Length: 250
Ligand code: NAP
Image 1 (tube, rainbow, N blue to C red):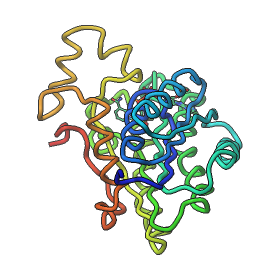
Image 2: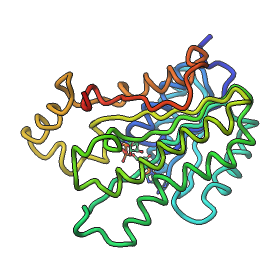
Image 3: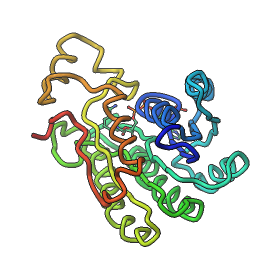
Image 4: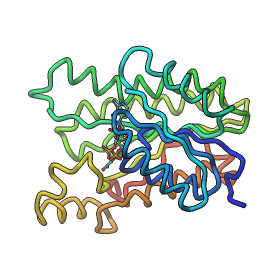
């Protein structure tokens, strides 16, 4: 029996990258995992298959986030497949293509809609589904605490708002034994970084040098921290911002 046997988790953006790593880890720990995706159904099905191949249970649900009515539509799809929720992981997110000098309103609004507004309203309507003792885990970034990459200004601002949301929500739902925490990765090798991280050996080495441990993070490095927060062992940890940057902020 796993540490999360009998629990149900929803991982937004579980189709790829860090979200897939989290979904697979929670599935391995015994949770039934709702693997959310935006447009990439095939990738979500791969995550589901990987969980099932290890004896776990999972299903895929698609919903574009950052558009009006996104939370209601996602929960409607979830309710057709599951009866109640124990763990909500707000992981789906997008980066910014433009920095301070060139970003335009539409991109700025989109960054906030996907990275900040969607988790807020997913948690708002998710709260009534979350069983007492549940978990909300928001995936942020080390960049909300240190301006290591100035061109990510709008992205870092949106994630900074998500960090504040974590603190406040922990007070709102705490009386029900629900914990709310933020996990903040450093640079992890996923599609979000594909255009620059794997462009050259030099880019990879520079990225690795941000970390005190001298390496680029893996999705497992993040998923293992999320698994701890989802477990009973983390019942007394709430309202926290967990640094999962491999010491990039040290
Ligand atoms: P990724 O590989 O690009 O995957 C993004 C995931 O989010 C995909 O599953 C994608 O679904 C989903 N998604 C994106 N936009 C969406 C939208 N508008 N509606 C619905 N789903 C959407 O990204 P990642 O690197 O794993 O990032 C995961 C989280 O970690 C993000 O919140 C990111 O900000 C954060 N983070 C990442 C790093 C890093 O270095 N990788 C560092 C710090 C923080 P589809 O597959 O359907 O497109």
